[in-house]
Length: 612
Image (tube, rainbow, N blue to C red):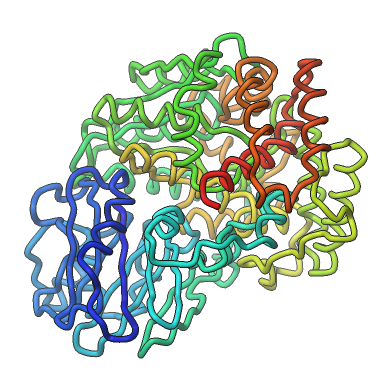
């Protein structure tokens, strides 16, 4: 897990060392254990790397890394969990390895299989490989876009990095704002991350499941992974379906315990994170495998005393079951303003809430010398789960919108109109131009995939949420907020074998008898606390935003609204926004729905004030 960057000067002139050094420095937080750069022989291509040492933390894992014959050079961010199995396969074909790293396995896989190596990987990655002979550059991203890869192309230069802000601050690209994307973010903050476009006109996102070639100055992008093409046969009985889920989930957890440094987990007390830590405990009882970290008993719990979303009792119950002493981090009113500008900067985009709790919790991991966390992300979008305490109405509306939006481009436009009308009626729609000037929906990954005819509304909705809208946004957030502290997040529920299997299951395996995630709950019987396994309450892992906006954030919000930011004023009816915020603050009536609708405007104004 690391930060990667690269510059290709397409006119043939040499890359200035200061340029690649500056770009690499801008992602230094992603890799606090070392820095490396590499230049091609003619010096018109340069790679930069910041290292977070997890597999083979010694010198053998340093990057940029050259193949044994010197022909190929790689920079890689992520983990290939099945690297031991791939290594044995490659050794049987004659490959010789000099290190114990998964990066070297990728290089050997590239030389053996080229692009066909990607489907063989079980992991998360963003990578770039340069062929010094053909002078071709190949870039690829994992199936579901867990690890980020942003790029900018112009006639003079091709540049890539792990984060948007690195490109924007590099001084090497045009930083003008894409107004259509900005408007889209304000209407629907989940409608951007699944697209190739970003808030900045020149910056593009290589989408999950895509790869890219740069050949003779020309960029070509193609999709190498489509989940619906890999759905396996489903067992005939529910008992067999549950048994297969249990097998896949436990193996996904076991693979992600491979580490040469201590690992842990962020434990909320909900089903997903509790299932992960309990599966970790079960794996140890069954017998640890090669390269598994025995230093895994680290659970970090964010607790919110007096807030509605405090799950401390459940988290402690799960920790006791797994025989782990949790590290508790109390987050209260005083933390509302703690490092607020840094948190928003590290988030690197616009979201529906201030993610202080997540940022503070990953900082706690670093302070305890834990650099890997196995977390429960992806389960909600894979099996359903968005009926959160205090947020049920908002998520019901989103679910209905996803159902409609999954049908056609015209339907997606209808969703926008209906959403805007509903927001206008509630007094929380502030885009200039009103309903006559709605931003166009952006093309999103997987939205045109042809799904099985027998699928009902739930399966279609989950497919879209998983690939196109909600999950890509959540993955972006957790990548930025964890890597801000040099912490790697591994996600067992996003193992591609588990994803394709669960996607193929009938809806009755996901929603049954009033429960979401039915198959997973059944699979975890006797493996976790029964009170958590059968709990119907769903609490999102969020900062207590309503309490904060009704209290300590009020002054910060007022000051932000008073700032003169012309780029924001061109987008937004600031008088209407100010009136709505003042009304909510004065009456102390902020709730989760109003937070979700209004915070993106505040977040956007903060970003535009910083960058434009």
